[in-house]
Length: 465
Image 1 (cartoon, rainbow, N blue to C red):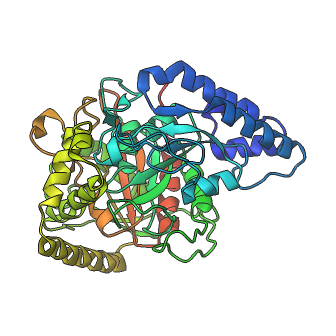
Image 2: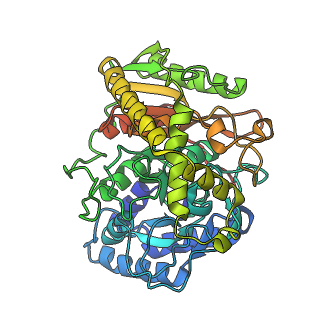
Image 3: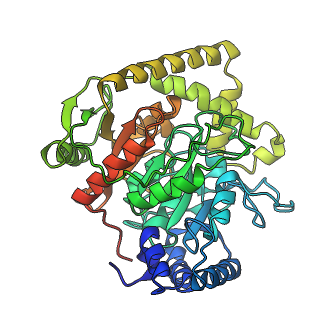
């Protein structure tokens, strides 16, 4: 176990609080110290509330001294992506056109649950404008950088949250995922990120991108994500789409392993191009499930026909929806790429959109049938390692969009399945590679079990700062 409180997992922190061997104030000061020392290089935060965090930590310390913790994560440091409403802090969504001069008197459901369970909220993490792309930079907050190589992107749109997790700037980090925005940066920065079944975590207000958008945990360990999901899944009447709360404890059977499970492996999910080094690292990781963990592994020829076009017909109109209230003058202050995508979305016909919805339904049925045969699906998380920071696409995809280089992520936003990125190795240049673990709808517990089994077999490594 590390001696730096900032690098301890949430479960380790809680154990030490319970034994009165560490104080939430010490843990909070350690996290804030790392933010002060390192975030100038990485730009993970757009707001840090030191006074508020220390006040919360002192209140938590008093509760632990009495042996009366407030909730499941009392005193654990946490961060909030700047797309999520947070009482007392502006939620600018990475945009110059969102006014700071508002009441900011409401928490999003996920933020409310963390606060109710005693988490110490440190600040807000960076996002591209309205979370529209798979990298993290904006005209408001600048470029967010990867802690493994500051010339590279951490991915997005939850890039700030991923960097905070990797660097010990918060144990529990809230991300959102509308097309891969938790899993892309988890893969690029070497942390764990989970997109749960749609509706498992209540959301308010609903994302302008609609029913492809999820809220979920980004952490340094699988166990922390399971603990965090226990908190986030609690009910909130503001989400009309939310699943009925069933009280599942996602930590309960996390160590049950995958022995006897039937797992499918797809190296390309059809015919997607994958960097050879990334492909080799992911293939070696997959063998761990069969050779060491006791699962049955089979290759599959699973393919989503024309899935990029179907996703674009959901995502681009969502961008148009996000920008509908802004004037032409305001749009001049926005990310030109976002404006282009929104204009393309506004030009799509209703009939084309409805045809895409119909195809999406077919994808969902296809995956329901797939999981009658297989418990889990494994793929590479990303087809390439992190590329240069500050651009939407790598040089070889010049003229394209972020959807062109993330073909493994957004199919499972369309199908609303739980899916996670678990770090599984490094390129020769020291860049992390992620393994994608996908389960049937409502099978978050199984995804977490598989990821935890893999983590125990191949412990995750965080960057040395």
